[in-house]
Length: 261
Image (tube, one colour):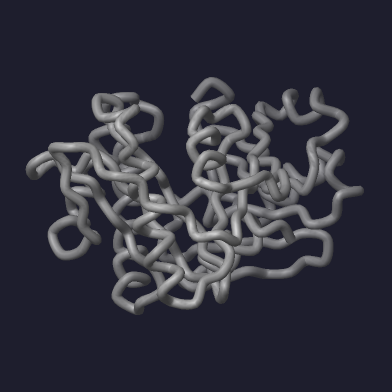
């Protein structure tokens, strides 16, 4: 597995998901959070099997008959793109970036404070994600709220076990940027790097990268992993911090509301 998938699977197992090996694919189930699309999915592990879109659609439906979405990780981009498009599935390339040098902590812009998240901060994290979905209307509100609150509760437990830490940048009492990092043996995987639109281009994400990387280095991590969409401009930020392309992954996803979401 690429470092991206290896850490994805490790984190899922740490948070109680079941990973079932079916030979040329894995089935991942997260009983505690049935609305988590990428916690209830399949992961194709055999490159030669990727192009059989019909088979994977049938496999997913058999494993998750109640799912309104389709989610599959692929080891390469399919050659027959039309077969996936005909199923209403969008294909996305992800860049797996790694570094074995601790990313430096850049200076924090004036007017902001940083702290490790805990206590009532977790409600701020949940409320921020729920409000963003209410603004965009991307997902069904009730299902998304269940997903977010389940995800936040899981992450809180990881932090309480010392396996992860999440950090936030605050403007006064307002949470404006955050990210997490999870220990997977000697690998450290970054999670959900995000900055509110009004506070971007101020180096907040770069600062948090260094803070979280130092936390993991103090706990014997030696390689840092971050996964981002290949088209995401944030990739430049990560490369400036010392990350380099390690591998590529591919997602096949159908939104529960159809190809356009």
